[in-house]
Amino acid sequence: MSGRDKPKAWGTLRLGYVARSRVPSDLANSLQVMKMCAAFAAQVQAVDLIIPFRWDDWRVTRTDGASLWARYAVTRRFHIARMLYPHWKDRFEVRGFSLAATVRAAVRRYDLVYSRDVWTAYWLARMGRAVAFEAHNLAEEQRYPVWHALLHLRPLLGVFCISGALAEAYADAGAPREVLHVVPDGVDLERFDSPLAKDEARRRLGLPLDPPILCHSGHLYPGRGGEEAIEALAELPQAVLVMVGGRAEDIGRLQALAAKQGVAERVVFTGQVPNSSVPLYLWAADVLVMPYTSQTPTVRYMSPLKMFEYMAAGRPIVATDFSVVREVLRDGETALLVKPDSAEALREGILELLRDSARSKSLASRCLEQVKEYSWTRRAQRILSALLR
Image 1: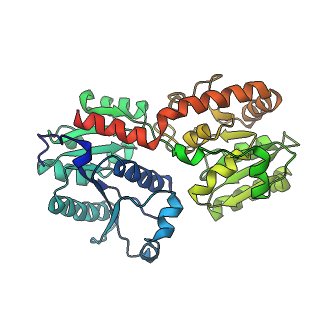
Image 2 (image 1 turned 60 degrees about the vertical axis):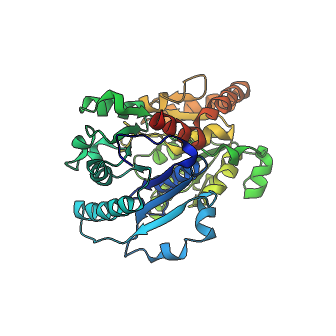
Image 3 (image 1 turned 45 degrees about the vertical axis):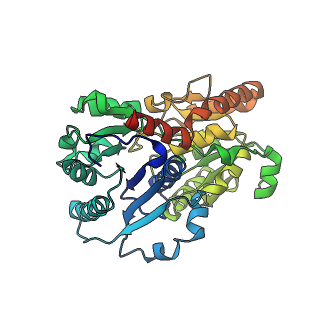
């Protein structure tokens, strides 16, 4: 289909989704890609996910069955096409995959290609094919010389930014505002439809029933607030901190810090868990913590997946106060936002919620109402509405 004409109806749309993500992996981008493909597949006729086949990751050939779909807690509604391509380093490897993805999309003649890859979007737009681009990191995308030209090609139907701050950055860099759309990330609300009581969730996980439990989910890279959370715990003598996720090297680093702070026995590291298991840990908590710092690489433009999972869990949230966080969470209404880079501010925020159960319940209740606007299904519908109107 030519980019000059838009598809007429969702139900007949054949969509190609292009991403450089490794699937499976422990990275949030692979989770987001799988969730969005499932959400699109529920709305359109067919979806093909086009991703790299990497020579050094033979595991992908063994996880293409039921275990892959269960890992991401998605229904098998779409097809995954793994592309063989020439491997070079850095930008040459990127272009190798992009070329393979472009050829597949051109041969398959999708009605629309939705791409997280700049080069594929550019080449298809130059061919006159209808394409949309999803933007996550301006600095990364600016590494490639075609990104600015892509923004002015007529077959480009839209640029979908995960935050308002990212859309503004794109506009400041020269993107026409009429092609920019803000679509924050989302959550599978269905996975939170039957919440467990706190004590039942703890029993199932083997966690202690009595002490206050704080929960952090996601990666534990330096700069993501794990250090601040452990330092805050040192001043909360009755609490237990459960850290869900994280790679072995990051867990080891934080275990050493916990020992130094004298709280090693009160920090539980789960390591990587399937996404389908995350709600159980969130339900077990008294307070959910999201302590991003000024050293978090994505803090200017991010739309954290865990933020929406926290909201859907029905537990009060303490988060550090950044502008992208405030695009979704409202201080004192849906969460308690505290000064970044400060274990003391984080501790005070946690204490405030532990001491005031009425306020905690009020914050959590308002989050449950607000998060209904952030399902993956609603996100896919917003994107399709913008593209096909």
